[in-house]
Image 1 (cartoon, rainbow over the protein chains, first blue to last red):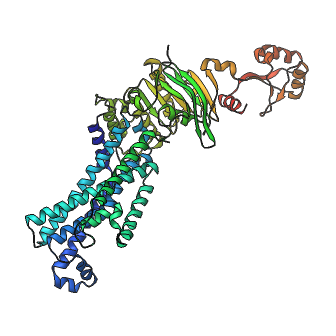
Image 2: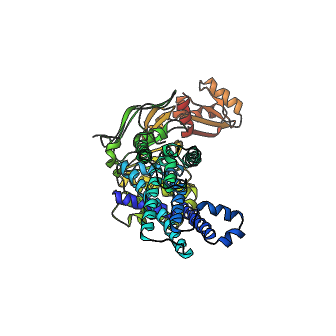
Image 3: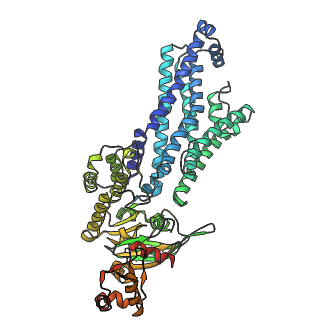
Length: 258
Length: 302
């Protein structure tokens, strides 16, 4: 089995699952909501008449492209931890929940090929989800005709979106290990939800830069300021990514597969 | 000749519990080895160790002389397996499930999927999602996955599970054909001795993780208990006459006279003559053989 074939088969399983289409539908809601809020903010008369929604929309500051792109990055930072983690949990956990792992373990290939193919398929799928959210968000922004669109704004916004996506993707390896260790989806999904809640608390306490699950959101500007993180915060995120990858590989290679 | 499959002093211990204890066995090419045991006796754990899914606490498994381990993954190209109840990707069709494994196993012939579906009578379910299959057809799909790459060795855990009587016969015939015509070596576990005895060339009985007995199928006849069952109009008197002659007769559960005395079992004609001469001619006289399941239970409770 070549690595390419294994990755292709993993992508086929993802494409044929209900999971990916439900995830896509849920993730679609996020840019639609962001577009709605920015539309309310852009139209002060609408904000006045919409009461609570108008008040909430004020949180985003001004209705222009820099604020809107930052909002999209925040969606990826927070929503991505949940959605990317969910996709990862499914790709690894379903083999245990559906008991199909036994067929994969007796393939005439090194187990590393299967694990890395799964990770590549997850990475590719999550990256596409991120690109989809960004493109949909940008399309909504263009329809609303937000002001201050320039080459510099597009480049800066694009950079923040890209880095936020990469940081969020790096955090999705640990759920893969938990899916294998817990032999299903429940353990990783519970873990992801707990980490998202914990990230809010730790970030609110002012220590978010030390907590990997809070780093993407801080970088995306959720605290209202621009990206002002030290290199250590980024390294911490990538360290978690490497630990998750290593733990998953070790589990497949050395643990008893009941 | 080197055995094709070899388990050498295989043991698996968990905290305070021994799932498999010092199991050694050898299987030659073209043999069908029936691995019999009750639920929880260690059959599946042994099979998982043989397939490299579980590491043995002691001992080792060998296929074609090569030790099972992470580095010897190329061995699995020659092995087809089915462990416990088979499962498939429920959202994919039967054909898609098989196609995935054809590609993962690098079977170059695209017709292999159709061939194996025909062999297992799955063609009419080709476009049905695996999650919608009956238990029997899911089992057929599991066996189809095991056969897809035309393996030299089949390792099957309870392959008759969930199959209806017709399916059991069809699968039995298929295994016979694979072993006797194509020389495929089959190692199959079951808790049904009667079923396995119909095709196995050799049987191993495992209980509480220990291999209690290995029997060649042709030896079975000699090992099964036999009894002579007699009926007569005057049962009490007929039994008294038999006991008087030293045959240790008793009434069995059906109310007939029964003796396990070797001479009576070997010479029922003499018993008949004797009863006639005593004035109690038999209305029924038959040598009955112990049921296989009863033999199995006797072995594991000894």
